[in-house]
Amino acid sequence: MGTTLNDTPSANRTHIAFFGKMNSGKSSLINALANQQISIVSKIGGTTTDLVKKPMEIHGIGPCVLIDTAGFDDTSDLGDSRVMLAKQAAAQADLAVLVFSADTASLTDNASDLFSQERQWYDLLQKRNTPVIFVLNKADQLRPSDCLSDKIMEKFNKTPLQISAIEKKGIENLTSALIAAATDLHQEAARLITGDLVTAEDLVLLVMPQDIQAPKGRLILPQVQTLRELLDKKCLTMCTTTDQFEHALAMLNHPPKLIITDSQAFQTIYEKKPAKSRLTSFSTLFAAYKGDIAYFVHGAEMISKLTEQDKVLIAECCTHAPLDEDIGREKLPRLLRKKIGEKLTIDIVSGTDFPNDLTEYRLVIQCGACMFNRKYVMSRVNAAKEQNIAMTNYGVAIAYLNGILDKIEFTQ
Image (cartoon, rainbow, N blue to C red; front, side):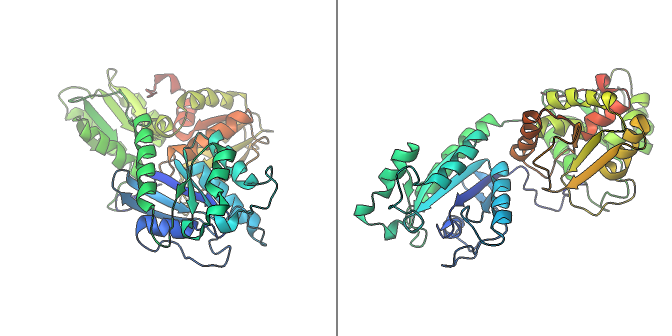
């Protein structure tokens, strides 16, 4: 169902990931930047295994998540799994810090081999349009004859920040560089959940069924975020459950300009809504807010072309234990099989589990992704595009299956 009101959501925080070889000082650098011990520091290479994530606030950046990754040169028994997690962090990263240090760079290598692994990761991050800050760590150990900074400049055309995480020297320069990069990101990502669908003083009715999956006394994250945005816009808002929808309408002097419903109540609300009221859902709003709405709408058309011999992948972000009438595990599969046939193969993944190879599927259906940042959702969208696989979203798919997709409002 997603994060609840009492949780601290990380999906809307700027994700800053640190990459480098083992023992390059990534963990020490993060600890120095945060001014607290977030990651375990050791001279033993490979100390960092799983991704270490620390939500925090940095003045000038705002809410962010610092991500520590395993060294990408890890050749231990679990090395491949650790590197795969680091690639997952690369998919999530809004900003990246590529860390070099004197004791992880072999200056005796041939010039063509020097920094070859760093080059591969830099290219990967560039492919994802992720800003990269270069850091030469352990500056206290550098000798003038090393000329390491010059060699990095020659290889990447980037001048690294020289920092000593242990002595906490140069940390303010890294902070300034992160702030500058984050400022550019914030200007590019001034996105709104409701877009231009409503403005100040518009009346908006939110239909929020509180089923078995809704935690008692709390709202799920998409509802909270949408409600907060509407209040910030100075809209007039009213909330109701599905069974009270008609009664709520009767209490109003005029129809709401916009009705936002849970996707599972699409058909019911559409049949009962005033003709003048526009209709959308939390999931379709988040489809545009977190992903590529045009690709999702186009992808929904694949549903009419599916046969029982095809395979569909349903990807949900949450890792909650499925309950009765779970939308991704029960309701959506039931709707699909009712239309296509009972033999339709449907695979379901959750959390960060997502196959690299999508070619066995004709359609991928992504949830609203309130738990993921847009960068990570778009990495999935781009993977589908590159493999020429149709992709849509829960809300868009349900509207299509109910025959009302052309009656639903979308933001761009």
